[in-house]
Length: 186
Length: 130
Image (tube, rainbow over all chains, first blue to last red; front, side):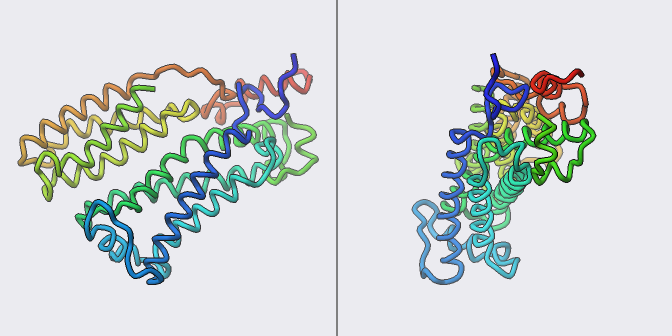
């Protein structure tokens, strides 16, 4: 029996299938919405920020020294990161792990570091400022939750590039999905 | 699945325990607020089969919780007991591999060797001799 050619060799499922990708895209869009809202508060478009649990916590965190360490507020950077996650999740077919490794690598590299920075920011809230910010925590949870589901596809693309290398083909061309490589390497 | 869920919850528990057990503002609270989110994130990511191997990351973190009260000199008995119990549970649960039902072409280690499951399966698919 010939297996579905969209499934990577040696895999029992296709990590680039839509049922695998859609939940991550939905989470990224949700994160984008939250981060955009927080960024608009930081840019003083909204005078107040929603904080149901921790009193002045959100105000303290979102106006803290760390949040303004860069020229743009940190939530704006987060929103940009989520947008890259969502776009990199949408682009490409269910064969993209081999036809467009570059987008899968962008996807994995955007989700990994974004998750890492989110954990760091969650740690800094109580340690540096003795405060919690509800929506910042929600955003942190979202970006951590996305890491596991996104990395399997990343692995499939890296394994494909390894096969490209072992076949003596150009990894660079394989990375960009040149036909000359995808026609030769499974 | 359960070892990962329990370790995620234990990580989250560390984040709220300084307030609940009354040692806010102490060194122990800072340690819990740093280690807790990391344990929870590692455990949750290891919930997925393709990244199950990350569970080992919680072994040193659990071990650190066993040492932290003595290295950092905790004042609060509640904090000491909490860190020792949570640390022992996190470390022990990180040792449980659980069931992996899916196949991942040989996993992450397959990236560092030429003869791996995905390479062999790919050769079968395009019918070329190995």
